[in-house]
Image (cartoon, rainbow, N blue to C red; front, side, top):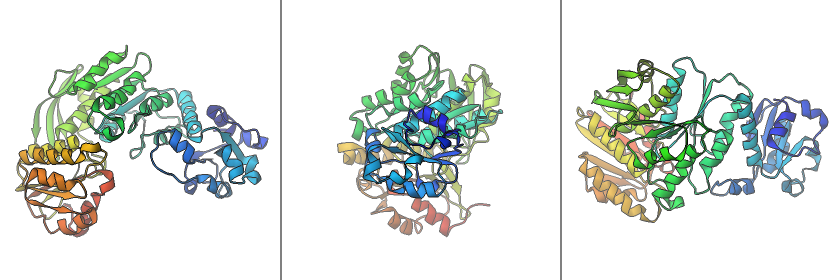
Length: 478
């Protein structure tokens, strides 16, 4: 992309920029000076941008790295004007572009690139399962010849989504974008993301009491998630979970088409006659407006079936048949740390679901163990503390422990903080570990042949350390 075009998209000020640079080609756009290579455009972020754009916490001011970035080959740097004198950038002024808010300029650039590309966007949100549903949806659409752009990792916020979209500046041959959109504050984050890439298809997975610490109530969470449907293009399609009444109510928020999906309640796309084989193997009958077919699905759990139904509904919106969708679903694999099933040569199985946790997601995964683990000698849960639950976190952990105990697992181990209350609520055999490092060292002595083990916890608890230690000590099945 010519730098001149990028400046127009950003609506930025290039008054001091060397005119010779306007025709320069920019081959990447980065926000980390360590990623700068020859031909890059460097976006210089500082605390005011983070604060104005709903990022919680204190962040490093990257203005100090402008000189290094330019020396390493950046074509130009985009900076706040008030940082110019403060950081003595006079010597670099002929390679600087000025913006009132560099994150907004970054988002404006992404929107401009998206608008030039002008192809369908599928946006996915929900309190749980976003990344899995996004990956399943991208897989379904890609299986039948579509080139799909999707967020890497969980790049679903006001910086991650533009980073993803700006790939289109280098390669505009993608046929469709499947983009995860997240939120954690009451600051209209999803509405802002829809402003960058208005969805043609909006997928609403669920509304759960996640981020209530910042939003105050589950009703406020629902309003925030509904911004995805409200932000669709005119005539867009909303894909709605009929088993979640808060999601189903969103069908009234737009004038486009609705495609519903579900297991419990009547919907356009449904899973019937669900059968769990060996853990990690599921069979069900997929019913769609375009026909019905049996599906062999290599993931366990109702939550994963619902994610598959959401992806199937998107497939339906793109005109795919039930048979085409079924052929795609049988070849999926879970994203790392999200329901990843590890069969160990020593005869036990571990479910690596360590990416994040909340009460509903934890209970859902435990139910998954019960449904799909009939052959296991023992069902064991290693559960980390669940974060961002507000003032009632202790009570919620205790009650979640009671629910887990009622599901008839054999042992429960807690990792860090309020996970101790989880154990007290469950009143089961097990142990509390003060942190994930201790858990990793001690739990390897607990596991034995015939066990089915779930490891889950909020991101900050780092329960993946338990998985890493198991992989270090034991071998996987060949």
